[in-house]
Image (cartoon, rainbow, N blue to C red; front, side):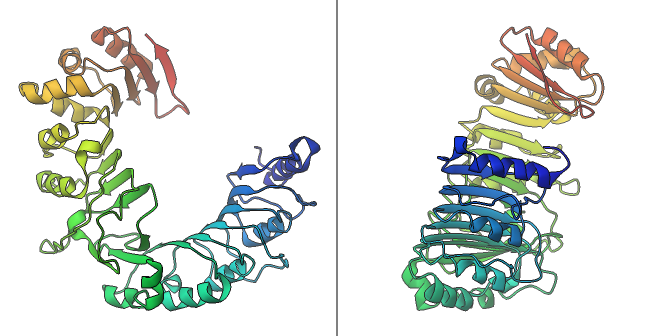
Length: 415
């Protein structure tokens, strides 16, 4: 798309109503800027499944006037509207599934939208205001406006800047007979030492596939559920950040576990030096034997690599900084670890590779002998680094991807 977003959006929308696309049922629109529908959609279309991003409230209402047969609708409200939409939207009698993600919408506007969806059976909501953390408010809305609703997924994330929140008080309105009868349970997580978003309230079982967790033993948590044994089974991607505690004695216990994590990213901390303790905690949180892809970011010297890596029996892809891989390969006297890496790792990504030590690389090649894909990030002479590594590894089956931080995309070098 060009810089004229409105013109480009009009072109796309006109395509949808052309005779050639008159039978189109499924559509997903994603633009880098706000989508403009008000002057583009001038006639009803037969869409039944629609997902759009970066749309403001008025534009969304203009669109909904033209999709009377819509069954599934997902939208990300991107801009804030001070007033109610100026469009009178007809009741969407076919709409059964609605996903609303927004950081710029009020409860009143949310209710206004839902009043046009009387047949809704599943509603997924994501916001960033404490005004939505009110079980009585949602209960009233669902009873009065959404009598057919069967599934309600809810999440709010925000920065809580006052003194520690009262978790019991936050969850009190979600403990009524209404919530227990529907078996809709809510969990609240609070990270007292996090500088940015530190309060998360969400429904369980958690249906999102990706989750970001701060330091596990700095987490304060409470739930309305009697059991979290299967609450996080859907989480396949896990991003955990190591944060330095301001109060070392703050070590609440977490009973939860993430059993099906396939993608694990560990974000380090320059001020943190007890990675062994972190390793013990993370192995209690996730089933490390299920991890297939592991990324280290800003993780340094004191990490207990062996205990973590040897437990990842499904691991095949490793992404980390070049200095860190040298620390691992310097442990080449440990035959157990070396044998594991040699058999397991087929996909390796090295970041910040700005110098080549041939002697170290030869040791490296003996350990990672089953690599099929090697990706390199280097500021200085990335192509030269690739060719030198390829020459040292002497493996014709490796595909080396070189990407300089000064370039826009990767270059593939089949060997």
